[in-house]
Image (cartoon, rainbow, N blue to C red; front, side, top):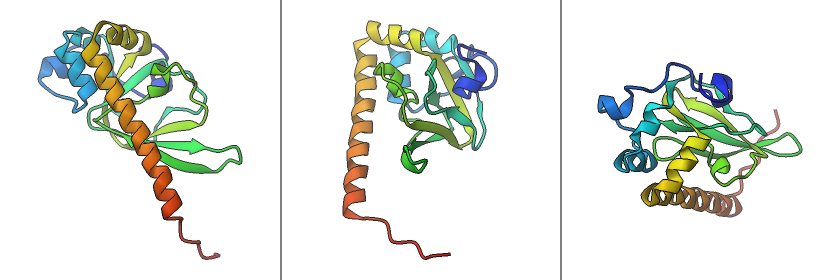
Length: 173
């Protein structure tokens, strides 16, 4: 297992040597594509690649993020847990981005919990290794910033929709 072990990041399986970059497979993520284009694909080969199961907890609320997850075929759902114990859907992450963005921002994960919504394959890259790659590659940093901007826009749109379209009252059971 890589840093944090399979229970922390959720990825189980062998390391990623001979993985997507070597095998010709591709993660649809522009972040992952930037990694490969900038000659830091070795970072991917030092990572862990594995299978995620439906319902598997990937990043628990409050846990330190030690690895970013890049999905090839899996999808994660993000739930925000409020102080009263209630939860609300906060988004999904698939091939287009990465899970663990709050670690990139050097922020704590105070309320989000990530769970595997659609089983499949993912790659886990240690946070320190990824941060070093970003510092050395402006195109990679730009790809991460585009993903961050997309997440912010998605959050704002979700808030606006919730305001304009309140949920229908549920009938009593």
